[in-house]
Image (cartoon, rainbow, N blue to C red; front, side):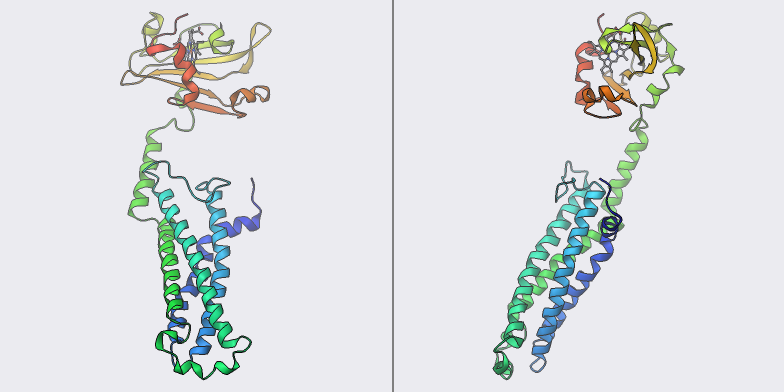
Length: 326
Ligand code: HEC
């Protein structure tokens, strides 16, 4: 989905938008407090109502932009409203979840506050309010101005958004925990050079060729194959023994054309004996032809690596890391 430039702007500027409602709701309790003044109560209660309405309506843009932003940067699924926390390490997702819940709670409490202030405003300025003027001074303290219950709700509203805003700040600028989590992800990626491309498999031609000419392989989609093995494993491979730890074999393939290997490259298959003796597989096809994409989850490019469940069929034939029985 490519978003419109306007939507893009609304999403990206979320950290800026939120300051408008947040600022209004931060001064709201001050205006509400001031409305307890014996003489200026009415005008300050009206001001409170005005601030609350603008803050509350403004917050709908902030909530909307936050949702769009979260979806654009894939923290929230395209049809979801909350991020899914898959594991403990997803600090950002965890913080975002609480950020959204606090913002939503603030919005609901804000709605109640606006309603309470509207009632005060109607009492003071609405139809039939003319005779109420002098009553104000005679009210008990907690009934003056906007009234104590509304003031309490106003503070709650500010509390929710203040907390949500604090978490938002952490997500934008980072804190110790998020920075540490980001650094760990970064490091894990650097240590895993093949996270995005099977670099060693793609460099198969630098390995020892185990076969001099392409041979047909029924086991691998009836393609034409050539097997290449790392120097540390070529002797074991030729002797039909399991590859030693650290050694790997790559099978480059060509599609068949009337019983002959065509020049159209097929997928790369890789099998590796890891340092701990376990076997790992990889399957890489950078460009799946259109007519075969339905067999590959409708992808135009696939890269699967152990322990991907899609490689279970490899294990079925290649048991225990030994050479598959022919
Ligand atoms: C139907 C059984 C079968 C399946 C499924 C299978 N293989 Fe193989 N594989 C074989 C056989 C048999 C050989 C020996 C060469 C040949 O016959 O093509 C082999 C050879 C290989 C080789 C060359 C090194 C060696 O051990 O001989 C690699 C690499 C390889 N397979 C990877 C894979 C990967 C990755 C998958 C899963 C995507 C896979 N294979 C699925 C049966 C299978």
